[in-house]
Length: 152
Image 1 (cartoon, one colour):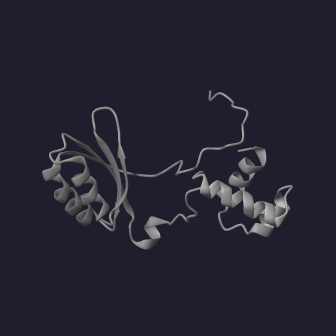
Image 2 (cartoon, rainbow, N blue to C red):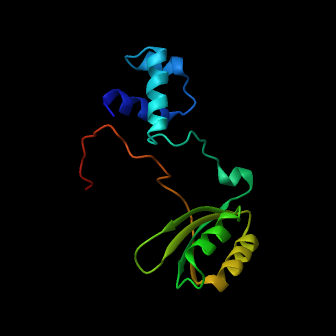
C-alpha cells in the first residue's frame, strides 16, 4: 500500500459513496487506475465493506447498551450462534480481563432491553451499562500520519 492507496482509503472513509470519477479528480490518477487500485485493495482484504451508519434513535432503537458476559456456561460457538441470530445485538467482542465478552446492543425501550438480558442470563454472568451518549463514535484508524499534540 502506497501513499495514494492510503489517501484513497481516507477519502472513502470520509464518504464511501464517492464515485470513481470523483476519486480520480481528487487523486493523481485516471479513472481506470482508481478502479484497478480499488479492486486490488478489495482482493487483498484491506477494504472489506462499503457501509452506511444509521442513527439508531431515528429507527426506533434509541436504547443502546453494553453487556459484559463472564463465566460462560455453554461452548463459545454455541453462544456466538445464539447472539448472531438476535437482531438486537450489534457487535460482539471476545476480550481479556474480568469479562469474556463485551456485547453492544440496541433496543426500542427498557422493556425490550430487559427481555434481551433475561434471555442471556442463563448463559453466564451478565453486567450491563446503558450508553448515555457517544462523544466519539466509531471511526476507522487513519492511515495518514498526523502530528500528535498532547492533551493538557
